[in-house]
Image 1: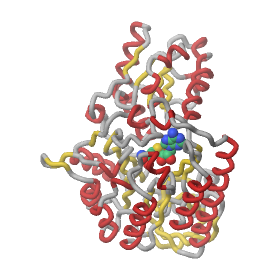
Image 2: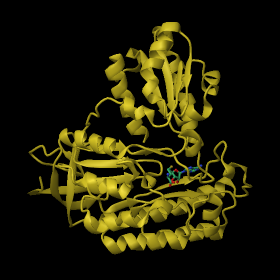
Image 3: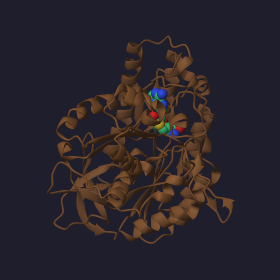
Amino acid sequence: MNEYDSAKMLELLGEKSNFQTTENESEADLLVLNTCSIREKAQERVFHQVGRWKALKENNPNLKIAVGGCVASQEGEAISKRAPAVDIVFGPQTLHKLPDLYEESSQDGKRKLDITFPKIEKFDHFPEPKAEGPSAFVSVMEGCNKYCSFCVVPHTRGHEVSRPFDDILQEVTSLANQGVREINFLGQNVNNFKGEKDGEKSSLAELIRDAANIDNIDRLRFTTSHPFEFKDDLVDLYLDVPELVSHVHLPVQSGSDRILKLMRRRYTRKSYLDLVNRIRANRPDISFSSDFIVGFPGETEEDFQDTLDVIDSVKFDESFSFIYSPRPNTPAAKMEDDVSLDEKKERLNILQNKLNNYSSQIARKMVGTIEKCLVTDISKRNPGEFQARTENNRVVNFSSAKNFIGSFVDLEIVEAKPNSLRGKFTGGTIN
Ligand code: SAH
């Protein structure tokens, strides 16, 4: 989501303020930091970065520093109190105002702050989307009403608001016309999308069906879905929409019913596993990835074991896991926590080892198979090679005399490396 927001900031600043990007910080007249506050560590990095940038103002008195995103939304004025070098503070819902805030601050030399939540207005201010390669993010809804007890998102991004259905399809069409082949629909609670279509509420399943019919669009993903909102119409799509990839990111957080209840997740271990099984029944080769929080306040050894059991049941693909981090204004932050940090680190280590075992097993099983891959880029490590993505979003590096960026190719997986796969071009291009 932040990557999408940052891209929009760049487009807006380019279009409205004639800014260009630079690789060299000391050349910049405006430095923008888009921030995340999901865990405390991400938040602390903001102040370190601003601290480093402050010195650049000595050589360039016109330099403005702006801080946007969720830390800005959460901290507001406290940002420039702690870091007076910051000139502009804006939130996730006011990023479209950045060009104006910059202009005003440059003219009167004063600090500017706007962290309001003006509904979904920002999307009406975005310029025509610009494709950056064959894969694109498209934000479909913002905010979250779930109020999971550990999570800061409803407080920083605000309540759920869905974009109108046709606006999204228009954005997808425009990207498809620029060569985009894969769309990743974004939302903090993406499967509760309810965008208005012909005066009625629609659903993510309807949006995916229509997007799949747009010429050039061959792959659809969505992030991040909440298990509670994963309704039957979405499960049904896996039967007859081949554009919808055989990979679902479905954060479980914990496998203990007691902890899930304290987290206010609204599902149980059983209902989560039932959902996984129903999706698998429709798409047997599908892979699941997930998010995990270890060391939630009061998590016992038994609760932790329940989480490990869920991993053994589902055998997740590459996943994300974190030690619980108390966030301001969240109920969990007030819960008693008697598990030591050392114990939490130990649990994270055990959990990550288990996750890694399954994800490398999946990678090893892929060796010898032929995968339909979208060629996205030149290889990061070796500019003489190309990088492609499998359906389960694995990176595959391969060499080819011809540049296939933007096309689907058949690659034989010949080696599983720790963070990527090696592929061999079979000569088969899909288009
Ligand atoms: N909307 C998604 C969450 C997106 S945030 C959902 O409801 O599942 C990405 C991940 O960060 C979460 O899935 C969770 O695993 C982790 N996370 C969120 N708040 C956290 C906290 N306070 N401490 C540690 N991890 C957290």
